[in-house]
Image (cartoon, rainbow, N blue to C red):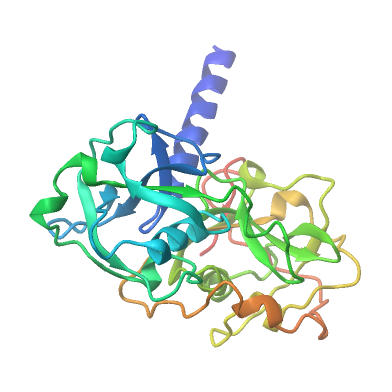
Length: 304
């Protein structure tokens, strides 16, 4: 009985982990109907609302006349790869099978290959009749190098989640990727993180064992306090010379980002935060109040 209950708990946590991670605007690559975070090439799917339903669902992007190098590269940037090596119509290759999801985005047009997400591009959910065929779905082949392979001080990323829009918040300082403690971390800070990554808003921020970092990782930031006017986390929280020791990795912050049409799109591009100040005085006051407890400890703590 105990093992059965444990199995149910593990399954529940896994479902929470994957379902809660998919937010409006999340992109992923699929092959033969299967998704993997490790895929650098495949048919593009996006979790988005349609013209007939506000509720988001997984769907495809049409490869029409407006889709080109910029659009493919932005998709790869959003997937945290270093741009696109190739793109095309699913019908032109047998490498990825057929995706039977409906086309959900058309007329995708991006002004630059340096944009971070598709929210920064022009799109429509009114689908042309020429896009109804599954053979017209977009596929991309991204360069296999990650955009954080040659990191700059203060660069951030979301890792450890099933998608690049959700995961443990890590910051690059002193030659190492480290985590951020949840003390005083609030909605303003979470929104700043997402906007730095090219999303307009956040939908979830929490800490807990399910996304905790390795004990070998440093905890670089604590008691984060940022202004909504900032574009980069490094502007308000510079890299410290040593890691913090008053936090545990169970307090590592995780964030889920999304496209919110009621918010102004982020203006950040790949290079925006590479020159943000990281030499100022970091807030070194130990946090007294952590995040508000929610759900159960094994899942994490949820921001109020």
